[in-house]
Image (cartoon, rainbow, N blue to C red; front, side, top):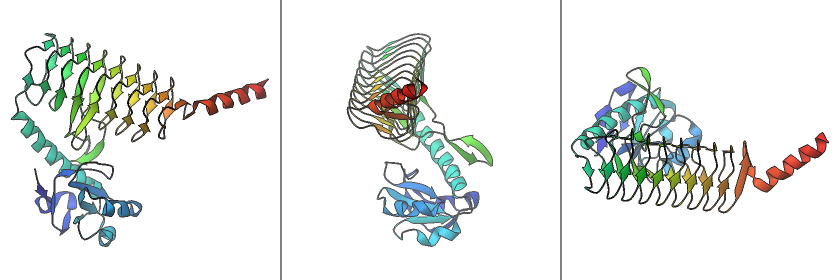
Length: 301
């Protein structure tokens, strides 16, 4: 659906300085085209101007002159509040679209009577097995031969806050969740919907242990293994054949390369190159971490 900035004139104090179309709300990191983004900090204006997927910007009156002329432009004292209010409208419109799409379930799928599947907006493929107390929300697509063990939840909102109707609220999520073929999610794995559009994606043959959380817009590569209590935060990308150890945390936007390994309890704050192992809080290359521990042991001795 296409919107125009003038559709929201006056919302949260929005003044439309240059009208134009946009497709979706987003942030600077949003990969999808036609995004409407808020920019309050002048340090990020250059990035907003150069990103071809951005179609419209709301910023403060003081920064309005710095916005590229190709972009639709709005101004408000609190750009982030405008963005939150616009997003709420788009989220409601998206839900109405999903409500017009009856859920499709392949006849070969086996679903426990205790599972809850949205009556609209979901798609469940051939030979999928769904256990007790599984919850599948609108916007979820499950490819063939996936297995969901008891308590798995797919399609919950991601954790993002904004001011809507004058109150601090969690953003509604507009995107979806997509499981590729032969994914197996053990008990109480939780996967959040993408925030602004597109999908949180779990690749073919991925296996998660119990109590894994995969946040909004994350991408899990084929055959990756996620151990118990792993926490994959928003926009993180886990490469093919990567291993995420028990209780590890992968921070927002971090990429873990192909066949890389994250040791138990590690907190990963920067990209991990393919094939490397990182350890610790905050995580370091494994050999450096071991050398550091040995140095501490020598000092203690």
